[in-house]
Amino acid sequence: MLKTFKRLFATLSVFAIALSAPSSSFAIDKLHFIIPGGAGGGWDGTARGTGEALTKSGMLKSASFENMSGGGGGKAISFMISQKPKGTIMVNSTPIVIRSITNHKGFKKSGGGVLSYKDVTPIAGIIGDYGAIVVAKNSKFKNFKDVVAAYKKDPKSVKMSGGSVRGGMDHLIGAAAFQAAGADPAKVTYIPYDAGGKAMAGLLSGEVSLMSTGLGEVVGAQDQVRILGITAPNRLKDAPNVPTLKEQGYDVTFVNWRGFFGPPGMSSKDKNAVAKLLGDVQKTPEWEAVRKRNAWVNIYNPGSKFDSFLADQTKVMTSLMKKLGVL
Image (cartoon, rainbow, N blue to C red; front, side, top):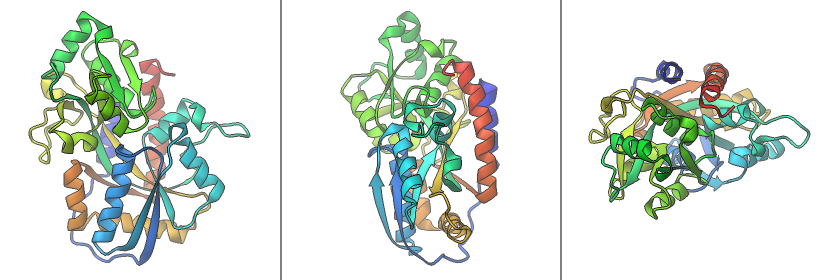
C-alpha cells in the first residue's frame, strides 16, 4: 500500500510548477463556486482561497460561493448535471474518484449507475494538500508514537475523526499511517463528520482522540491543535515546526489534489478560459499569500493532463482501497 501512495505522490509531483511573472490575465467578470461540503473543510478553503486570489489580483471582478453538502459530494455533482449553471465551477478532489469507485450511496444515479468525474467537465487540478494527523493542544499524545502505543495497548481507546465518510480521503490517510505502524487499518475506529469544521469541533470537544485531515485545514489553528505528523516526504518551509510521519519512522507519503470542474457540456472556450485563469493566478503574489497560508503545493494540471491523471488515479485508488479492505 505504501508503494501505491508513493506512486500517486510521484504522479502528482510531475505537475508541480515553477512560478514566474504573470503573462496576462483573462477577462472573466465573475465566477460562482459550488462547494460540495460544509464550512471549514478543504473544499471550502480551496474555493474561497482561489476566489480571494482571483479577485484581489484583479483577474476576476467578483466571486460568489455556495456550500452544497449532501451525499458525500453527490448532491453538488447532481446539481451541476441537472442545472448546467453558467459561470459556475465546482471544487473537488480525490473523493470524487473514491466515492465513484466505492459506489457511495450519495453517488447513485436515479436511473441506475454511479456518478463520476466523467459526468461533469474536468477543468484543472490546482493544488496539493498533505495529510495531517492532529490532536487537541492539551492532548496526552505528544507525537504519533504515543498514539501507536495507546492503540496497541487498547485499540478501542483511540478514536479518529475526519471530514469525510468511511473509505474517504481522511479515513484513508489515517488508516495508512496506522498501517505503517504495524496496526490493522481495518480495525481503527473512524468517526466521520460532514467536513473539516465539524470534525475539528468533535476533536476539541473530546468526542474523538485524534483527527485525520488536510494540513491546509489545521496549519492556521495551531493555537488549538497539535499536528503530530504530516504525509510529506520532508518538512515544509511554510510549516517548519510540523514533523513528518516519515521522520518518526512511519513511511507514509501522500498528497491530496484539489481542482475544479464545470458543468457537463461546458464549451471548450469557457473551459479553456477558466483553466488559463487558474494557471495565471498561481503566478501572482495574491495567490502566493493564500498558498503559503495553507501550506499548499502548487499543482497546475489542466485539460487533457487532468483527464489522464483522473483516469490513472482511479486505478491507483481502486488498488489501495482493496488493500485497506474497504472494497
